[in-house]
Amino acid sequence: MRKLLLVFGAGALGGLISSLVIWQFGYTGVNRALGVAIAPDLTLNWLYPRIVWGGLWGFLFILPVLRSRLLAQTLVFCLFPALAQLFIFYPYHTNAGVAGLNLGMLTPVLVFFFSWVWALATAVALRLSR
Image 1 (cartoon, rainbow, N blue to C red):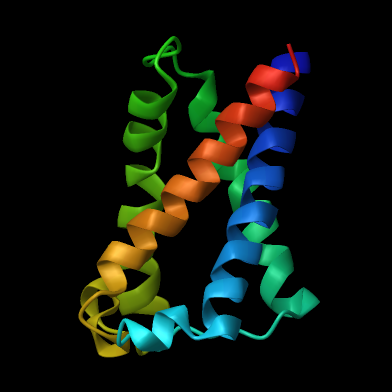
Image 2: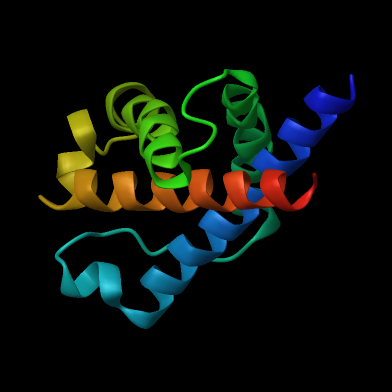
């Protein structure tokens, strides 16, 4: 039970950190400079689902995959939420289209980067909790 609580909590923290990075990129115009229309407002309605999903995706860290290699592990685990965002959430739950390409051609790159930020923050939180 302790392990489940740790991975959920670390994933939720990763979701918070990733969301703040997404917001900061939108707020400062980095996304716009890259031709991507992702600039969310920092509201609880936007933030809360991302924290919960981060916690749920955190359960990936129960899997014994590349535990001794931080970079490799985060690159593998970031693929799951990124691919879900690009090929499930964007096309079926928003008008962003497949891979979010209606938001800009570099949307997939940014989604993978933001998912990697989530995975890195989650992995670091788990390592610090030991």
